[in-house]
Structure formats: C-alpha cells, structure tokens
Length: 371
Image: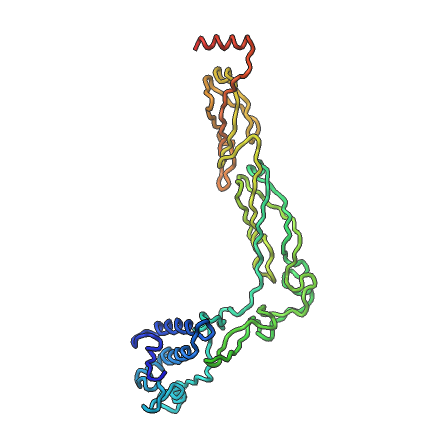
C-alpha cells in the first residue's frame, strides 16, 4: 500500500460516515475475498488493513491527524507501515489503544458473518435444528349429499407420529436426560479459526449433543432417539356442510410429527365430490329439470318435485311456458362460511308427444282451429 491513501483503498471520501465506510468495506471484501472465484488476496489484505484503521473511530482520528505517511512503506521518506503503527499503538508511542494485527481475535458475527457464512455468537444461529414435521397432502372422495350436508369420514394415513414409548423426547423410559457438559446447554460452542487475517472466533454446533443442549444416557429403543416413528393411523375427518369440489380442508398439527418435540406439520385434504344423477350444483344453488305435459302447462297443476330434503309440491300456474324457472327458496346447499342455504332452481320443459293415435290427432286439430 505504498503511497496509497486509505480512503482511496476503500473508495470513500474523507468525510464519509462510519456506516458508509463499513458498507464500502463489505462490498470490496466480498468482491476480492481470496476464497471466491476471481478473488485477489493482495487486494483483500489492503482492504482489510485500511478498514482496521478507518473502521475504528479512534484510529481514524489518529490517521487523519498524523497523515498518510504512517500508513506507507518505503524507507526513503522515513515512513512506517501499519505493522509499525500497530506496535507503536501497544503503548510505546503517543497513539494508545493497543492493536496487534497478528494476534487480535474478531467476533465474526458483525462483519464477516453475512459475507462468508461464519455463525454469530448470539441468537442461536449455531444451534442445530431438529427436523420439523412435514405437511401431508392427500385427496378424499365424498358423495354429493355428504358434501352438501357434511359428514364424518375415516382416513388412513401412514406418517410419522410421536413415539408412544418415550413421548417424543427420544430417551428410553427411566434413563437420564442431562444438560450437555460440553456446551452447558447452549447447543453451540465457540471455536477459533486461523486465517490470513488472524484468529477469528465463531460459533459451531456442539459436537456432543448436536445442538440439542442436552444428552440422554440411553436412546429410546422404539424410535432410536428420534422421538417419532412412522406408522399407520386412522383419523376421523369432519367434512363441513357446503364444501365444494376441489376445496381443501386444512388441519394444523395433524401432519407428520417433528423430531424431539418440534412443531408438527399440517394435513391438507383436497375434496373430490361425486356427481349426482338428479342435481347439478352451481355455487350454492341446485339446478334441476321438470318435464310437464301440454295440458299441465295450459291448465296448470300441482306437481311433486324432488329436492335434497325430499319431495315437495310445486304449483304450476296455467299458461306456463317451456323454459320457465321456478325457485324453491332455501332448498339449495348450506353456505359454507355463513348461515342459510342457497335455492333450488327448477326449469320446466313442456314435453311434446311424439306418437298420436287418430283420436288424439283429431283433438289437436280441433285445438289448432281454436287458436
């Protein structure tokens, strides 16, 4: 870094804020890190050395006060490099605030954690996570009337359930569960990494308890310490009245059990509704057809109509035309998310006779002369 200004190394102005200096350093360190493809170790060292001074408010003030000669190599100008400056800062010079580049330990969570994947010492980021239970997605076919009025159905699932022997803690009944002595129950341990920049402290998953923070003297013989086993389970499922074809029933916590007490997954059941030969569903309304004769249409009549609730009497007024729609209020599908029901819409079709005997033809001819 001979004759090079530290602000120029980081690409910031001399009046840059500490936050701007930190952002510039992160960007350049990420770009030139030697472990990355296209990285430059020499450039990375220069960036790091510059940030070690400018990133510290006290050292930055000293640098601004004594000039860039303190940051250069080159005996012709009688300068000194930053290693000399660091030794002087150990108490032999007027700078104070000891600094030793070779032996200093960094907490990597502040700067390098986001860039190169080192774990932070706080917040449990170094703790291993037990496997959370998975979601289950399946289908169920129901009858038309079951979807309309609701029902209870049995479903057979093969899934992970909480171990009935250990209750999910993974320990053989009667065995001891103790706090891990290695990590003191934290689930993680500190480690020191030697790098080109010096010694770095970071957090790692405890090798003895694997992040659990506790140890068992004997694993459960049924689940082998996982706290769950895979087995068949019959489950009652309530089909809500008014559910439509293709809708999904969501049951939180009814999926697969997680390892050692972690959250279970959910159960998602997609409903498939069988068709009915007599009714068609449109939203919450029921559509049906009714055939009547010429005389019933002309003279009127009372006709029995099939509904989801059984037969009802529909009054056909005289002079009814083919295609007329009658509404049977409240005879449709119950609303799934509110009270009440839809309607049944009955379309009347006037049935034309196809074969007439001589007497019938004569009657229709007489009618034709009248109209």
